[in-house]
Image (cartoon, rainbow, N blue to C red):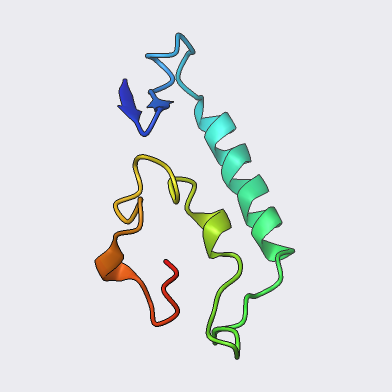
Length: 83
């Protein structure tokens, strides 16, 4: 069992669950393939404005005590004086 950033990670056996059977693994892989087949393809180029509004939603450690850039330091401020 591992604890990282307040989250606990463990194997099925550590959680007291039996290992998956070969049939369960194949069914899971099949469902994943079907799900990916219906997903739209993301654009390969970044947004024209250069900023990514979704960035804060991809990193759940951003702005927490586990974020290496938090709190903002004065030497990392931009021209307007904001972090």
